[in-house]
Amino acid sequence: MQPVVAVVVVLASGLVAAGQQPRILEGHRGSVLAVNFAPNGTLLASCSRDKTIKLWDVSSGKPTRMFTDHTADVYSVTFSAKGDVLASGSTDKTVRLWDAQTGAVIRTLEGHTGIVRSVNFSPDQKTLVSAGVDMTIRLWDIETGKLTRTLKGHSARVMIVVYSPDGKTLASASSDKTARLWDVETGETKAVLEGHTGGLECVAFSPNGKLLATSSQDSTVRIWDVDTAKVRHILKGHIGEIDSVSFSPDGATVASGCKDRTIKLWDAQTGKLRRTMTGHTGRVESLAFSPDGRTLASGGGGGDTSIRLWEMGGAKE
Image (cartoon, rainbow, N blue to C red; front, side, top):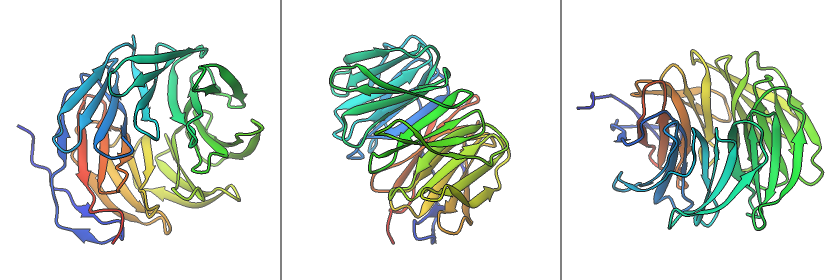
């Protein structure tokens, strides 16, 4: 029987409503390294150190499909804009594209020489970007599966790479303590974001692309102005590595998940802490907001193999 956990629901406006327990999804046998919602919000994809990817029905909390072709830990999983294709990256050094309906592997992309930590689709769905321990970022043509460009510049493993909402910029975070902004068209580095005193774990763009959030082993989250590459806020309060960071769909809230077993919600404009949410029995490895902003999914690690769905009250007042 799960212990009763007191939580508080925080509206995107910053108001606090009556508390509810998160729904808990059980099924993985290892740390949940990534969670991501389908574009329509009805499905949640998760991947784990148990070498599997699972799809969950969000309304029922039941698993609907399991993908098992990877031969090692799966670090990243994400949906295409239509929700019909999944992409994943693994310790087995491969990137895979899957048919989300049938579970069949559409294509296996090979070229990384180390663990693939991150995969993401471009907004126009023509390109897939991947990054990993080999310190490279690679861009792939989705239709042909061919490698079109390799970006180099980080001096340590690349933990994550994401597209800006307009698709013109990539942001990457590395164990070399920096984040980088890349010009997608030229492949050149636009800016190096320095200031963290520990390796970076995660990076996320705001929905309008004007802000960037980074999380680090130094126990802080930083919010950056993308145009100036300057820090706006340094968010302090966590104890330990902050594994995950995510913006709410309306851009008002930044969520962070940490080794200290907590999730914190921050005001994206002021940097002020709104609420700390507890319940995970191990580190919080991964976070994702639902498209409507009403739910925050979190994946556990460090002995906690659960996924928790936190009701957020919606993305608008």
